Amino acid sequence: MATLVRVAYARDTVEGEMMQGLLEGAGIPSVLEHLSREDGGSRFGFEMLPRGLGGGPRRVMVHERQAEEARALLEETFAEGAEGID
Image (cartoon, rainbow, N blue to C red; front, side, top):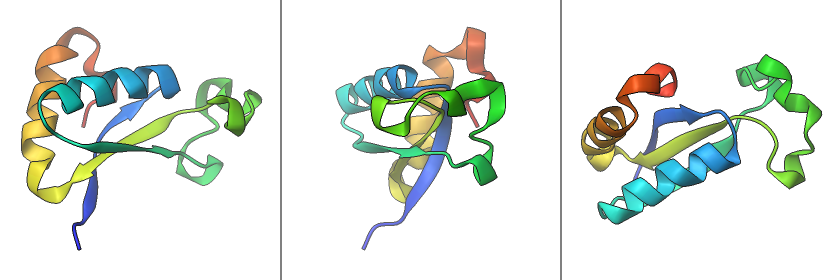
């Protein structure tokens, strides 16, 4: 069983899906995970949007064995605004 690890934070579903598309294009499957209030999901008022409508920040998760490659790709692509990249 593969272990998923966080490679980035997305401010919302749209940003997360953009990251997923980039990763998918490189052959790296990913999952978006909703952040709860305990995880920092209440920052910036994102909790005001209903969860079912895509509101709130997301973690971008990939298989552990592809994490380094995924982080490098996201960092290279989002370098100017990389505050969400870990």
